Every structure is written in structure tokens, then in C-alpha cells.
Image 1: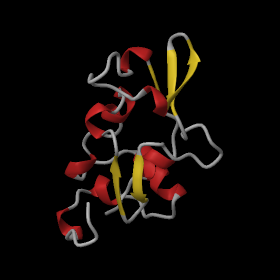
Image 2: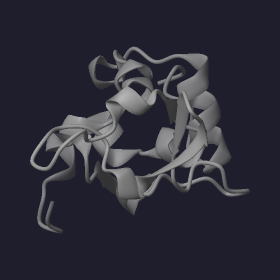
Image 3: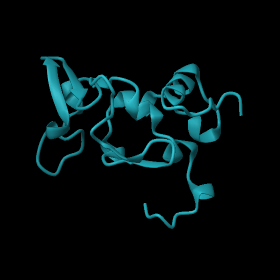
Image 4: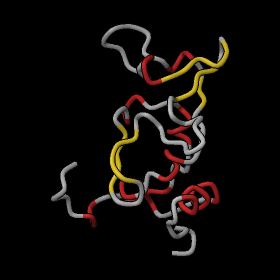
Length: 120
């Protein structure tokens, strides 16, 4: 996205990104790219925890920030692997873009000094 993007056209998630800088993202290795040109999480963006558990790099830090997150939290963000993001990212608050939020979303926003969406 460019700086000239009208902020009104961005979804709440494209303006926020707090969840990508608040929580660990663990997933099964089957969600990794399995072959060149395939879909899935790039191997270089994940760390192996066990034979059956991977984690997105950056999400296990004291100040978490997913390696795939681009932009500035609370201003304008994106995911560099959006189409291939792991299942926890697909499943996290899927209704946020419609203005339906949950407590986990509000907690992530609070960690970044952003107001809760559930009160809007």
C-alpha cells in the first residue's frame, strides 16, 4: 500500500495489526510451503518447535511482532504472506472486518495503546 491510500477505504484490520504484534502463532508443519512454487508459509519465516509444531518467527519475542507483518501497528499494516498465512491467522477474529470484534482483539489493541473496537 502507498502513503496516498485513503484511510477510509482500509479495513479495521489493515489499519490495526495489533494481533500480529501480540500473540504467538503456532501451526502444523503441513502449512509450510511443501515445494517450490507451492503455497503455504515460507520455511524461512517459521521455526520448528517439535516435529508437529511450527511457530511464526518474531511471535515468541518479549515484544512479539510477526515476521510477515509490514507497516506500523495502529496506522497501516499488511501481511507479506496474507494468501498463504497459517490457520491461526485465518481463524483469529474472522468478523473484525465487519466490525464484530472479540476480547482477544481488544486485548491486542490495548497492548499497543489503541482503543477497544468493542466499545466503538
